[in-house]
Amino acid sequence: MNGDPTLERIARGNALALCAGGPWTATFAPVLERIVADAEKLAGSRLDILIDVSQVSRLDTFGAWLIERLRRSLAQGRAETNIAGLSTNYASLVDEVRRVNSVPAAERASVTISGMLATLGRSVATIGDTFLGLIDMLGAVLAASVRVLLHPRSFRLTSTVHHLEQVCWRAVPIIVLITFLIGCIISQQGIFHFRRFGADIFVVDMLGVLVLREIGVLLVAIMVAGRSGSAYTAELGSMKMREEIDALRTMGFDPIEVLILPRMLALVIAMPILAFLGAMAALYGGGLVAWLYGGVDPEAFLLRLRDAISIDHFTVGMIKAPVMAAVIGIVACVEGLAVQGSAESLGQHTTASVVKGIFFVIVMDGVFAIFFAAIGI
Amino acid sequence: MMVSAASDPIIRVRDITVQFGATKVLDGLNLDVKRGEILGFVGPSGAGKSVLTRTIIGLVPKLSGRIEVFGIDLDAADSTARRGVERRWGILFQQGALFSSLTVRQNIQFPVREYLKVSQRLLDEIMVAKLVMVGLRPEVADRFPAELSGGMIKRVALARALALDPELVFLDEPTSGLDPIGAGDFDELVRTLQRTLGLTVFMVTHDLDSLYTACDRIAVLGNGKIIAAGSMADMQASEHPWLRQYFHGKRARAVMG
Image 1 (cartoon, rainbow over the protein chains, first blue to last red):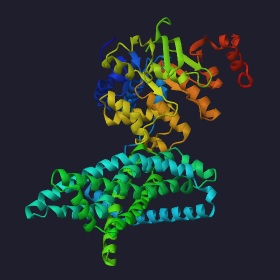
Image 2 (cartoon, rainbow over the protein chains, first blue to last red):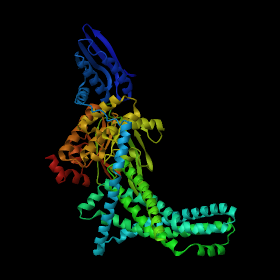
Image 3 (cartoon, one colour):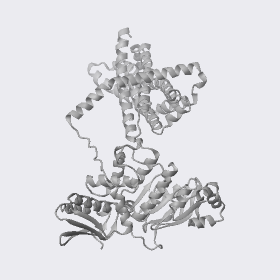
């Protein structure tokens, strides 16, 4: 009785008996499927077919369904088909699977050229929506700020301070470390190439302008987008998934005011601080390399730096920082609120948050470059 | 899957101690679950019912003790033996724990696809059979878990737990969050499945209706130990204060009519 399941064919005059035996269970499903597919070919060959299951040692849903499937295909061939030898327990199981009527086919996602073009077209067509969403969020945040200004008591100080700790204080070590290293690399590369023209000292000019005006802010913004933008999206997204945002709304709170404004504010405060610290760390790293590798002693470095840069360079960097913070924050919050019910969607929107955040930061940087060039700073 | 001698427990738990920090949640607990029975597992909130369930299935590490499922000591078992055991049990988590990025169809087919090499056609048919068994229509197959109601999530999760026709199922509060009719149907369903599939059911529940209608035996957890185990009549006869309150309270009387 043990071993593999069987389906024996025994001819009885004009009728055929299919005698099932052995364990008809999930474990043997691949074997059973083959046996049943073979037996299904008998459809229409004889008048009466009897499926005898009295010798089946064990039966579960898989076996019961395959017997039922066999019965149906044989019955379609207009053969009179019956199942015999069912014990009461198994009969109720077969009754259960008999209730299966329609099996909806799986929707297969086929990759076709037209499908790919359609996806491309759809994403191009929705670019406008992305901008609209961002502007919508900007407007909502500004409106909430005005409300908070009018009713200062509704301002969430604790929350803001908490987020400030997360995005500013805890970000300091990594930001300082990375900008320090970047300062070192810029300085080393500068000295290495400038030395050929005997222009070693000009590395200080390059370092000063680059760090204060461009790299310092841009690098910090990219790190903030990766570090804090993603965290905002994931936090808001998982809150959205678990209906926490709906709960807030039904209690009469504005999610923008409670969740988004403190986060935005924390980011806008944090970015200039981080950009400043980053710039200092980069200058320090660059100076160190210039001294140890290029032989520019600290005094000469500082003198040259004083001549090379003006307060304008510093101002330009500091003006850009909060704007970039706002862009990162808005992108992160829009993506966070767009999360649907699944873990996959959370992942997609977190990715989108970082990618779009960095993209818009670089675009903004370009816009600023044009603007400052136009006004002559 | 035939019901064998009652002396052969499908789960044997001996001297289990589980500690979180300084608190002993389970303290030298012993429990047997017999083959083919529906065991209702009750106890006050926070007594450690879910912890015991999670300890048996290996999600919570235990400090000491021994757990045997299907006669296999889970600590001594190698990974193949463990996988063999896991293939033979199904678990319904309290929140359903459906994979949110997979459709209902994919959720139910997932364990089958992993363990058995069968055609897509059979996968689909078995998926529908399971859906029908748990009282859902096949049309829900291509919905995502986020698009289902709470009761449907429970049912789909049960269908997934039953996907491989396990011999043993763990149900963690299967009827919580269901309307009384739905809960009654669910109890009936568990009964039917137990009868037809020869299932052994380990059910953590707070639902007195479930205890009355579905369970063969009841075990009560308190102070980290099993304080009572037996039939409904034994429970009602017990003098233990918590049991008295539980089985003779206002709600219990309402259920008993």
